[in-house]
Image (cartoon, rainbow, N blue to C red; front, side, top):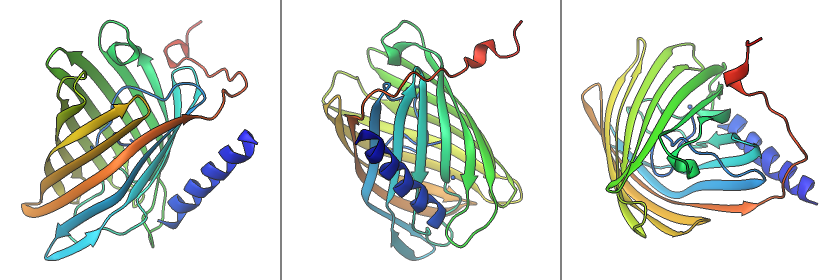
Length: 257
């Protein structure tokens, strides 16, 4: 039964991605250096969102499916099924299927030191588009008494075959707070395309380890033109049952004799 449920979830989200650019950590465009536990599913869902650009306002929803299929490994499927309003700028996280790996377990894995992860995979086109791109991200997370910071560096080949660089810094209030303030500042530049400077502020309500709600507002400038966005969503997790033993290669050992 669990296999059929997993297949249904994967199939449904893949179909949505093909109908519709590393994967995000709600409500941010960047992500953290953590993955779902083995056998755990985590769904990030934005049922309420709105973007205003060039005098037009459109609703935006998105969904991210995360599945911990092996130790320190996660499968990530993401889609934004609507087209953003013209002038909105590049969506930093495209419709994508990627793998995320914790290179160095750290504070996010209840161990000392920073957590370091990488994420990579293909980028699928938006609705009506064509072509396939690729993405690679490096992620570092560190936690202190005052809060947590996540740093992202992402290089993309977009589906229309342009280079893209995404740099993000995420700041969160103390992890022990039930409701913690959050912020993100990022730069996104596309070769022969727009450059975006973005600032987001909001809050995350951590109900428990398996459920959180978030709300944020984002103000961006795309080649100097203002863009505003409202984001409201939730993240929830549940066990799907541990998969049969999956032995993934450790990237730190590849090429060693």
